[in-house]
Image (cartoon, rainbow, N blue to C red):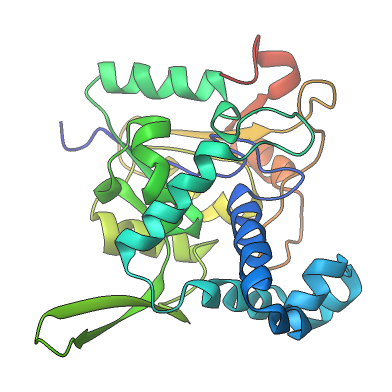
Amino acid sequence: MPERFACFDNDGTLWCERPRYIQFEFFLDALRGAIETTPGLADTPEFAALIARDQTALDELGLKRVALALAGLFKGHTAEEYRSTVRQFMASARHPEFERPMDQLRYRPMLELIEELRALAFTVALVSGGGVEFVRSVSDDLYGIPSELVAGTRIAYDFRRQEDGAPLLTRTARVDGDVDEGPAKVVTIQSQLGRRPILAAGNSGGDREMLEWAAGSDGPSLAILVNHDDADREYAYVSKAASFSEDRPITEVGADLGWTVVSMKEDWADVFA
C-alpha cells in the first residue's frame, strides 16, 4: 500500500548515540590510522583539537569545519571502498562504556516496531542526520532496510575518466546540500524518497519537522519521540539537534503537539537487542 510509509531517524532512535555518535567513533578510528601513516596530520587544527579532546577549540572551530575535515580523510575513495571500510570498523568496534559490539546497541523495542510495521505492509525508510553513505553501509544488516530507502546528509562525488577511459566516481570533502536536520529532513524525504510518511520516529530537535510532517498527513498518522530518561540501562538526557540551537526541549514540544513520547525507563522492558 503506497500510503503506508514510515520514516525513522537513526542515531538515538534506532541505536545508541552516546557518549558519541557511532559514525564519529568511526571517523576517530580512521583518523588514528591516518596519523600513523601521516604523522603531520596531527598538526591540523581540527585534528589536533580532536586528539586533545579540547572542547573549547572544537567549539571555536565549529561542527561543520570539524566534520568536513574528518570527511576529507576519505577524499578520493570510491563508494565501494568507503563502504568496505565502514563494514570492517563495525565488525570489530565496541562501545567504549558498555563494552559490547556496536551492532548490539540497537534498541529492541524499535526493531520490534519495524517488524510489526512490515507485517502491516508498511515500507520503512531511514532518514538520518548522519552521513548517508555510512548508514547505507550498515542499514540492511542492522535493520533490514536497503540502501535505496536510506536518506541523510550527503557528501558530494566527483566524476572523471581514468587513463583507459573507464568512468570513476570518488568522494570529495564537500557536503552536497544541507546537514540533514530540521526542515532539511522533510526536503530530503521528498527529494530522495518521494513519499510522505504517515508515521515517523525520532528523538531530537533535529527530528521535529519530520515528525510534524508525518503527523500532519491526511488520515491516521503517528509521531513517536524516544525520550532518553534511563540512566541505569542507557543514558538520561534530552536529545538536541547537532547543527542548530533550539528554543525548547524537544520533549516539551512533543508533549504539546500530542506526539507519542516514549519513556525508555517506563515503557521499555528491554533496551538493547
